[in-house]
Amino acid sequence: MSRFRGPRANSPSSPSLVCRIEAALFPLVPDEPVLPPPLQAGAIVPSITLEELRKPCKRIRDHIAPGLDGVPNSANKIAIATHPDIFLQVYTAYL
Image 1 (cartoon, rainbow, N blue to C red):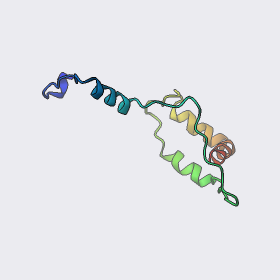
Image 2: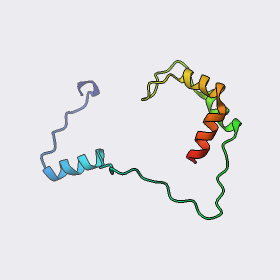
Image 3: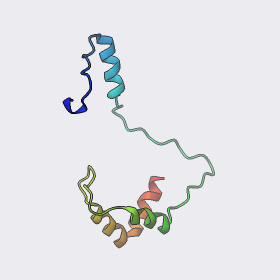
Image 4: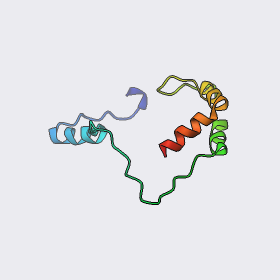
């Protein structure tokens, strides 16, 4: 905190204030997964196109830190280029 070079704030002393801050910063997550709402009758979900897959793939930078899954971006790009059909199926099913 010393690097911020600002005045130090006192810790909150009110237990109710601490509880409100904690609830705002760390909301409770339900144990059950949240399911998407059911499709309305007659609703059509368009498929993801190959162009919609390739365009964002081109914008992915190679030499940056991998995400939480630990998979490098270059590996994701190679996988999408090698088997785009699998990614199209997954993204379309997700929608």
